[in-house]
Length: 194
Image (tube, rainbow, N blue to C red):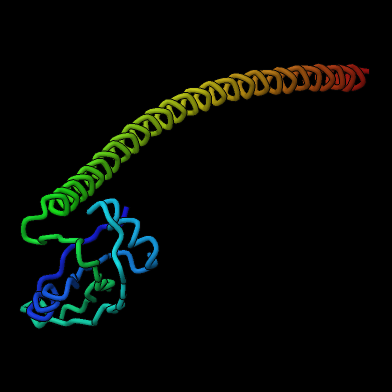
């Protein structure tokens, strides 16, 4: 569907006397055959001639308090259509074109609203996902902390057990050493007596 909009200027109004009407089209890529089909769909008959002119967008700048704003106007295609002698259209009273334009605007607004709603839904989903991820990360961190505490406790227990074993071994060694020393002392004492 090509959006066709009547272009009303002094020059285009002069052309209406010779059955030439001027329209603008936003879609630059459409060709003359597509334009003829669209006009046939709207008015119910094919035009005699179709001439097209492409107007490229112009660079525009504006000076404001915030600074210079630079932009570009949209490019469009101007279509001059010539109808036959028996084919009459009245641009001012043509309700079909106005309906088409109104419906197209409505559809665009609905599409824009749908896009905005989708963006909001995506944002909410992302927020929920972030919240869920944060909860998961917190749970994992809590679990990791608990596991680390348990591991530390086990290490401490093992260290205590190892320390106890070492102390026992040292005590046992000390006892043996003391026994040997006592034996040697006794032997020495016995030798001294004799």
